[in-house]
Image (cartoon, rainbow, N blue to C red; front, side):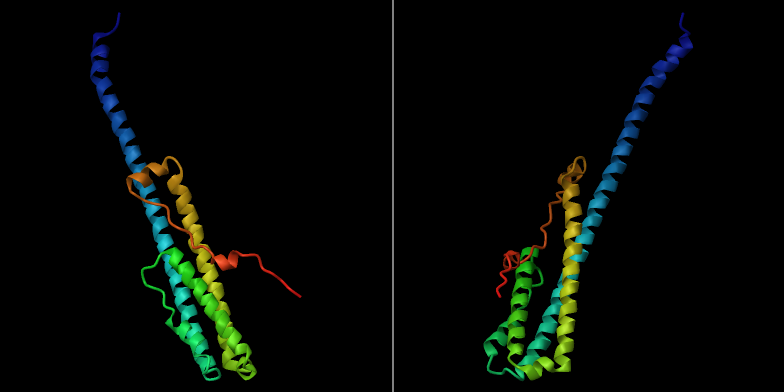
Length: 196
């Protein structure tokens, strides 16, 4: 025969154990939710930081290009159209990654145009200041490439995380959307034609 005090104890403890179990599961879920949400927010901060790095590199590139234009102007005053186009190119402050990619392509074209102009002036090309400026532009290109890689790496990690279950639940509930990659200019994706 069962002990009546044990039965009454179990009747009393059963609901308490169930409530404690439910509360414990809810607490574990809440902690998981907060940790996951914070991780996704940290990704967004990293992405914004990397996007800022791209902006800094594009601004530096633009400034160096303007210095190169100023150096070329003294030699090629009659080439005002090309030089004017370069100095008018400005990136809007609130632009998407696609717009930044297009702007980067325009700056690359402008750099090419100015470099072609400089080819026509051997004295300019041999100038120590112009050569130093060319080195700075090359370094700025490397900085921009590095900033792009960091940005795209952060975007890739974030985008993978928000589509993976169960993190996708938190992402959808928090209305966190995928970010766009910094893509190469369409002209740079084309096959290079080498002619001899």
